[in-house]
Every structure is written in C-alpha cells, then in structure tokens.
Length: 180
Image 1 (tube, helix red, strand yellow):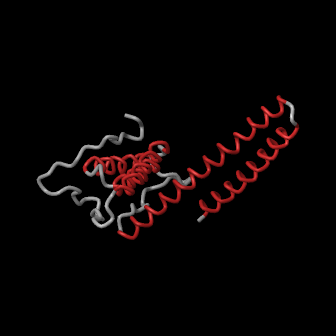
Image 2 (tube, rainbow, N blue to C red; image 1 turned 30 degrees about the vertical axis):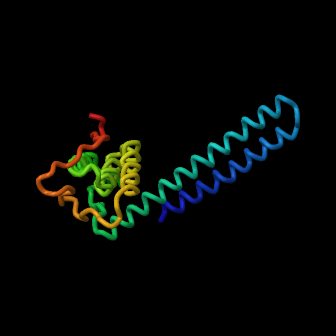
Image 3 (cartoon, rainbow, N blue to C red; image 1 turned 180 degrees about the vertical axis):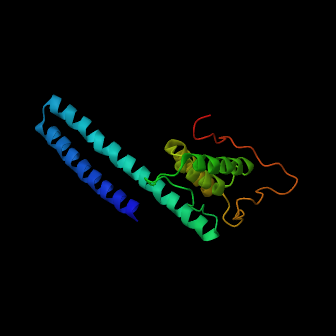
C-alpha cells in the first residue's frame, strides 16, 4: 500500500510539473518572437515526453499487478520468505539461489508467463531492476498472447508441454543477475 501511495504522490507532482512547464512553453509561444516561439515549442516537448513516460509506466504497473493478482488467485505467486539483512534488504546469496531455480523453471517453460513473472520477482530480489523489468514485460506479452481457455499449470514444477515433446526454446534466454 505504501508503494501505491508513493507512486500516486509522485505522479501527481509530475503532472503538476508538466502543467507548470507546459504553461511556460505557451507563454513563450505567445510572446511571438522567433526565438521565444522556438524555445516555447522546445519547452512543450518536455511535458509531452513526460506524460508519455508516466502513462507507459502506469500501464506497466497496472498490467504487472493484474498478473500478480491472477497468479495469486491460482496459488502460484512466489512467497517472500527470503532472509533479510538488519536493514531489510534481501540477502544476496539467498536471492541468487532462488534466481537460479527461477531461471531453470523459465528455461524449461519459456512460453509460460507465470515462469517469467516469477523470474522477474527473482531478478528484483537480486537487485537487477533492468532485467526484472524486461522479464516482467515478457510475462505481460506472453499473457496477452496466451489462450485464456487453456490455462497453464499453477505449480512451477508441472511440465508446460505434453510428455515426449521437448519444450520450445526461448528467444530471450534469461541470464544471471550478475551478468555472467
């Protein structure tokens, strides 16, 4: 809940900032000289980019939360039971051990959005945010293309392909959080 409040406060501050910058851009354009019009147009580009960025991030968070809710309803959401340091951070060795397990699960079922979701959580626990985001984007994309009338197994140990058939290979094989 704290993260949601922080996100909404940050978004509100950004929207206010975009409005403030945009109004300054309009004032520059209204001044009417070639230099001020040029600067005004340049200044208006900043809020447009900012609004686009805020929109894309909000959509990403909403979709990731929807996947989390669906996975939780299926009973497949990873449990947060990793040991922590006194400051509250997850211990690196424990996060790396869980990451290895999640990477193997994802390699075994590369077309299952659930494994990519759990891999994204493992990346985040290992403090590799860029890869966590890419793995979550992959989970979102796979969820969009997966048929909803044939849900995948809820348990991470269940096979994702029929017996006797090899699992399809992933175009984006996960790598370790340390980059090795």
